[in-house]
Image (cartoon, rainbow over all chains, first blue to last red; front, top):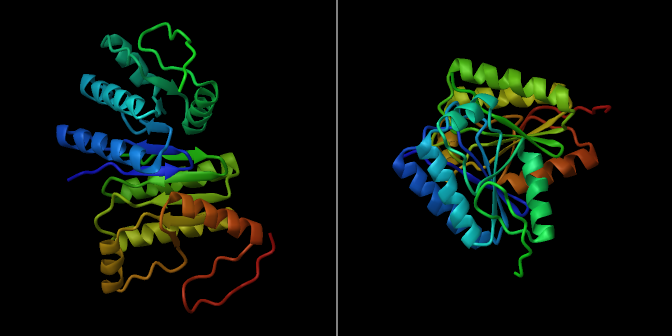
Length: 136
Length: 136
């Protein structure tokens, strides 16, 4: 069975999605990530989708689920490396990846997570990203 | 065509191999890596093989080639995340991954590269290859 590796780099878990996600792969990835967040105490999850030609509703939902799970476990999720064509298709499909932060590349994702942690921002679902102060 | 993404993290390029490597994928990866090393000036390449169940002679040769190319471009290569079973099979196959440094995980690989850069070590091929002094 395909299994997407979860790499720990400092305070961040990095996942690079390169294979077509099946139901089982997606569930395994979610479980692996949740376990690793708890085991390592990491506060950030970066999901790299550079290799993906297509982000359909299934992948979109998987990303949302991962972001939600991470949030419950006190970790920020940032999706990085989205291709321009993927972004266009996403919008055309009416998928807005609600609740998912994005960054251009891994380094910017790391900066975003560091900044978010520093400011203790709360990730808000929805379009306008209202900034609220969190008490952790 | 499958394309393995090359992620830049600080001074290091990270490649996570998750798909079966074809001739074409391997060549593309080598070209991508060489171009990225030159473009970014990175001094380290980390290749994660956590996802690989098998490292056969083809993959072994690809790793060696990548290490050699990187070395010429003044970058260290470290292979990380090898599974115990893969290590056993490698030795049984008589492949010793000459000239390739290994580390347990990405973080240790980064430490190894940082230490190597600091000490300006010369990467020596495996057991018998003669040590040469480099002027960097």
